[in-house]
Length: 570
Image (cartoon, rainbow, N blue to C red; front, side, top):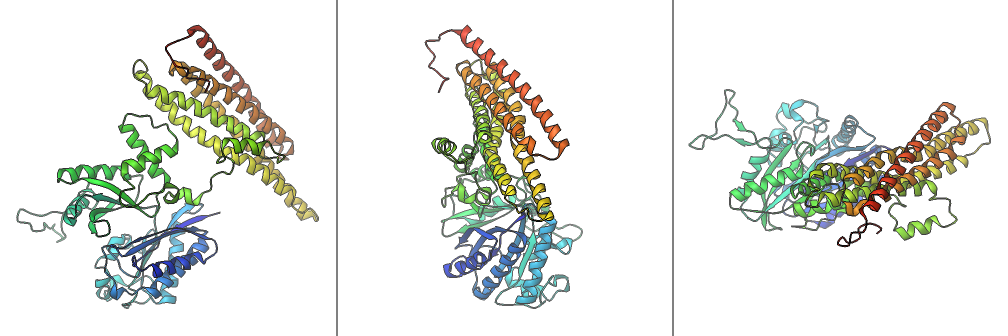
C-alpha cells in the first residue's frame, strides 16, 4: 500500500482547544494516523504530522486546513516564526510506494479544494510549484502576512488557486510536495537573538548579504544585493529568541539530510558559537526525524571517539540523543519521535523475550516454526561474529592493526543480524499467507483459478523467505572466519559458535525451502530454487565445519591460560 506523510503547519501554538480541534479533524478521517502534534508558544505555531494512503491524506489535509482557517484569526497573530496564513504550509512527503511527482499531484488536488471551497489564496511550492520562482517557500512567504494584501495586487503573484483577494482572517496557504525535511533547532546559552542570527548566516546555504566597510549593502550590476554563500548546502536557517526556553536558537531546516546531516550543522554551530564566547547547550528536533539521520549521527560520534560503529541501532540512537543534547529543552523519546518507529511495526515474534519466543514455539500453534528458528540462529550467528569484532576493535596492543578489518566485520554483522531478525516474522507471515490462500473459495472455475494463483504465489513466498536466509548464512560465515582468524584469542570460541549457529541456520533454512517446493506449480521457478538451495547448503556445510575445526585446533593448541578470565561459553 502506498503511504504518504503530510506535515501541515498552523499559526497557532498557544490555544490548546484550537490545536486539539485541528488534531480531531485529522483523526476523524479513516485511513490516516496522526503521529505527532508539536506546538510552540513563542513561535505561535504547531506542526502536525500524519501518514496515510494518498486519498485519505488528501482528505485529512483539507479537513485540517478547513478547521484551522475557521478557528484561527491572523489579525491577532504574532509569533517568532515566519508565516503567510492560518494554515501556513502543507507539504506532502513520499514515504513508501509513491513518488515525489505523485505527491505533487496530491498537493494540487488539496490546493484546488482549499481555493475553491474555502476561498483562500493558495500558492504551490517545491515539487508542485507552477513556475520555477515559486519553488522556494521562503520566496513565497517574503513579506509575510503583513505584506500579503499588497502582494496579491501584483499579477506576478496571483495565487495558483483561489481568489487573488486578501483574506484578512485566514491569509494564504502554501501547499506542496518535497522530500523529507528535518526541522532542527540548535540551542545557545544566550538570550541574544543577534548571535543566533549571525550563526544562522554562517551555516545556511544562502549565506549573508555582503556589506562594505561603511556597512552599506554591496550590489551587483543588476542592482541585487551580493551574497556570500554559507557553509552548508540544502540548509536554511534563521536566529530567534524563544521565551519559553529562555534562550536563543539557531532554527534550521535541513531540506536534504543526506547532503547536510544534523550532526554536521550541530558541530559547526558549536565551533562558531565558541568563537563568539557562547556555547551550545543541546538541540531540538521539531516533529519527527528519519531513523537514518539518527543512525548517521550515532556513527559519527562513535567514530570520533575511536569506537566501532558496528553496534545495534538502539545504541547508535542513544549516542545520537546524548551527543546532540536532544533532551535539553524537552524530553526526546526515540520510539515516539523517529518516523519509522511510528509508521512501521516491529515484528511480533522478533520483539518477544527469549522465554516468550521459546514458549510460543513450544505450543501447538504451527508458527513460529522451523523457518523462524533458523532465522533466529542466523541472527545469533551474526551477533556473535559482531561481538568478537567489537571486542577486538576496542582492545589495545597487537590487535590494533586489525581495527579497520574488525570495524567492517562489526558493521556487516549488525546489518545481517537485523535482516535475520526481520526474517523471523517474514517466515511466519509467509506461512499465514499460504493458509489464507488455502481458505479461498473454490466453487466456480474463476474461484479455483484465483485460488490456485494465490496458492502458487504464497508457496513461492514460503520457500523464498528461507531461501533468502540460506543465502545470507553464506555471507555471515566469512565474518565468523575472519573473527576466528584475526579476533581477540580470548573470544575465539565465540567465533566458533557463530560458525556453528550459521551452519544450523543454513540447514534449517534448507529444510524449509525443500518442504515448500512441491507446492509450487511454476516448474522453472521450482527447479531453479532447488538447484540453488542444494548448492548453498553444501557450501555452508563445508565452511561451517572448516571454521569449527580451525577454532577447536587453535583452542587445543593454546592450552590453559590461567591469567585470562573465561570469555567464551557465555
